[in-house]
Image (tube, rainbow, N blue to C red):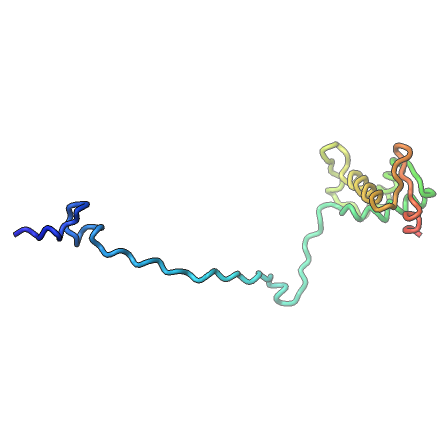
Length: 149
């Protein structure tokens, strides 16, 4: 006796009980609830109420050069040649400079000297140093003089 014709799949010629086409469709996937945002992670030290100190920076931050530049220029009457300023900065900042400050940057200049030049530019933007009237000379403005007093 042969099974009835309607018991076979028209697509694969297998009995419907064995055919993937004859199986009932899978249930629709369950809709997931929107994901909750994870709470920010808090370090154990913060959770315990203790302070966390990060490692000191590898090099002296540029901003630390400002008071030394101002003092050097003030000690020289508000005006000095760049090389004189740099020599005095090297002396004043010797205990502050870190080993990475003595490495060279891409231009071949020592990193601390480059940082001092960048800080001079920032001081120029803040109105503490005059725009260069003579190459190689840094000069305080009235605001720069008042800041150091």
